[in-house]
Image (cartoon, rainbow, N blue to C red; front, side, top):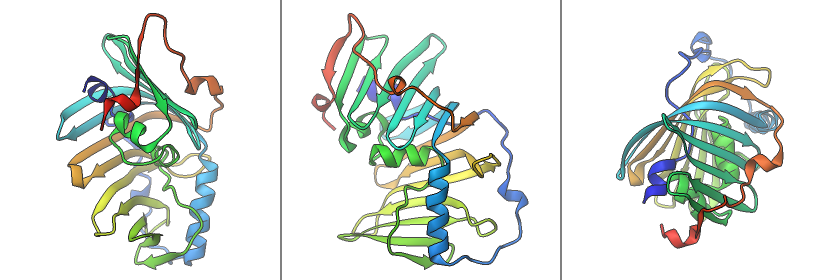
Length: 257
């Protein structure tokens, strides 16, 4: 479907050669207590609040491959704006907030709108997660919450109930998160995310490269940010869009899976 080919969430692959910040931190540090690691993750989530960046995107899946530029704006927890670019201009604009997800396909003048839901976000991004989880992951932060986490080597694992689990992997030198994954009751990885090419910012180390993998559907989305700006202020209006004059509106729910 055209909208899915145009958009596939935005952010990632060329640009900065990247400061391999973690590579210089070779010595292994003592493992903190589990409660300390959880507290560190929560504090990092609080420090990284917003992002504006140009990104390159590299996608591969059963529906084909694509590479394109994207403008990414995020204001956590639940505000997202993606503008898919081409040499001819903007192909697609997607906005999402706590109430609504909308997308405007500029060439066909089609305007898609629906409620904020995992299903509607998946129609644009092909990532099976909630908006708040996506904005966290796009900023290099595992969507962790306080709870009963257990140590597992360089990882922390939590039981989500009914057989579902999530895990956070850490760099053993600095003990900052470098991976996140969610597994289903059968132990299959539903979604795995890797963070790499960290560089220092006033809010802490920030990854330039983020890779999403959905093994069950053979999908991979690699992102590489170009000159990201962190913790800027945005007007809420940037994350909603009215139907453009002359556009035909299509309910997102009518698109099927």
